[in-house]
Image 1 (cartoon, one colour):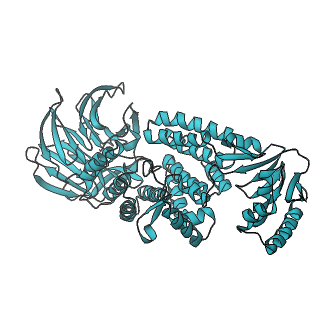
Image 2 (image 1 turned 180 degrees about the vertical axis):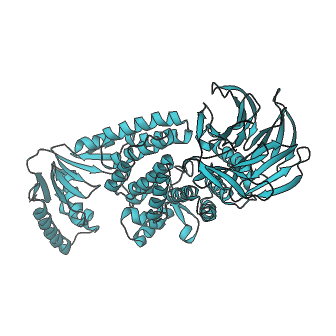
Image 3 (image 1 turned 120 degrees about the vertical axis):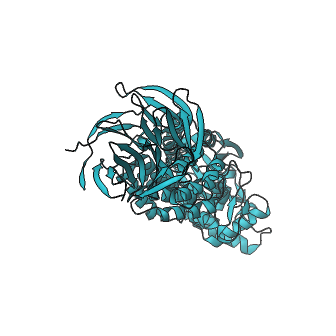
Amino acid sequence: MESLITAAARALEAGDPLGALNRVALRNDAPSLALRGIAMAQLGDLAKAKTLLRSAARAFGPREAVARARCVVAEAEIALVSRDLGWPAKTLAAARATLEKHGDLANAAHAGHIEARRLLLLGRLDEADRALAELASAPLPPASQVVRELIVAGIAIRRLRTTDARAALGRAAQAARLANIPALLAEVDSANLVLDTPAARLITRGSEHPLLLGEVERLATSTALVVDTFHHALRRQGRIVSLGTRPVLFALARLLAQAWPADVSREALIAGAFRARHADESHRARLRVEIGRLRAELTTLAEISATKQGFVLSPRKTRDVLVLARPVEEKHADVLAFLSDGEPWSSSALALALGMSPRTVQRALDELARSNKVQSFGHGRARRWMTPPVPGFPTGLLLPGPLLKT
Amino acid sequence: MKRSAAEIVREYGPFPGVEAVHGVTYDGTHVWFASGDRLNAVDPDSGKIARSIDVAAHAGTAFDGRHLFQIAEDRIQKIDAATGKVLSTIPAPGGGGDSGLAWAEGSLWVGQYRERKIHQVDPETGKVLRTIESKRFVTGVTWVDGELWHGTWEGEDSDIRRIDPETGTVLEQLDLPAGTMVSGLESDGGDRLFCGGGDRGNVRAVRRPRRG
């Protein structure tokens, strides 16, 4: 092993990126480039880090396949943390296969975790699950176990399985203490916070109260008619009517459910569903048509009857109507939900994750920026968005294990 | 050129708190190895660490009969083996790209890893007396019975090879099993070669083939 490379790698491991840079700043051989790349990543200059790691991967000889694969994995992780989700998954898979073939199982697992985290961010939960299952057997170092359990917890949270999520976070905390990496412990804590912070609001009979994720989960087995504003659907146990593509019908259903068992006046329905301030005769006609459509959609779940001033909802086969809403309802809540992970996102990555058009996302971001709810930095394609304040930027940059020892 | 599989006679370690072995030497009683921030003396019979010296130890290690020589960053430290004190330092010829270190015939022999070179260096001044070109990345270097041996480690392949000190021609090659690394090499003066196992954190004893 080379002397200065060893010294610089040790400095990096001890959390001293400047010490590492001091030792290899003027060298351009492959291991030095890789070391400098990682040091820059730790110092937060992800663009520079990416360039250096890419040069390092090129500079390693054809016989140094493992070293090259580790550089690819590091670059993929930087891409993930930069929310550059369009990063080629195939390159990462190839690097993972190389590492596996050469017995570097810890870094192979790290590569798999990066892929699973990407899928989780994209909301492709089944694929994320499969990616994790492929890595299941090998015993992992504690830091990798933490990452693995965080992904398991992330999937469970998205699937509203709080018991599984809590168990995974418990295991993650245990492994983080073993690994003795404060950044990882902090990450586990902030994941725990998700379970202990209200995830939704329950509105029923004119009153409302906050719900934790676990309570939202229990609601799934409730016999009540639930108007779910997260999924734009109405459901009672297994029966689901999705109104995702019919926003006006959903708005009407929600207004009726919130007032239940009381009725809602025509004026209130028109104002709420059509965003019209003054109801005229054409609005009333349209309301009749829309109510008719809603009635047809809801036949199995509820009935809608006309009253003297408006309409009233009567649920079938249940005595309860609940509205499940976001804790704070505001425009572009879905965009904010993604940004609240504290990471810098590109608008194209957000569009990919939200399944929206880049133009729609860009409009939402501009609007949110005007009200200081989000901030951006960088320009052009390198522009990134995040919610202020930002906890420890960049979080989640763990980088492959012993990248430089060989 | 003779080529055969290396015969591994014994493995030492892994040792607690040792992540990687960067250099190996032998003082007649103990096998010394460099593990980043210290030098450790292993009893070759019990396999236990008998003693250690806290000193920066990033690459090759050598012993001249009284002193230990240890590469750290871009310099070679001369250490009193009895007290562990650093007596002097000279610049390393590879400016930090150095890996293996050996003592022989009044000179230090320093492997320069990626440059695939072995330098003969004046131990007092650090002056490069001559340079031997190898074909592979050089890790450890050792002299025994007038034979110059060095370890290689390039990508996934490692071997120990005896080269002609004049021309650099490979005379004999002992291949290590795939995925095994050689970091640091030292002869015990007899038929054993000690080699460091890189980030496996162990030391192996390999049989030196007899000629005749």
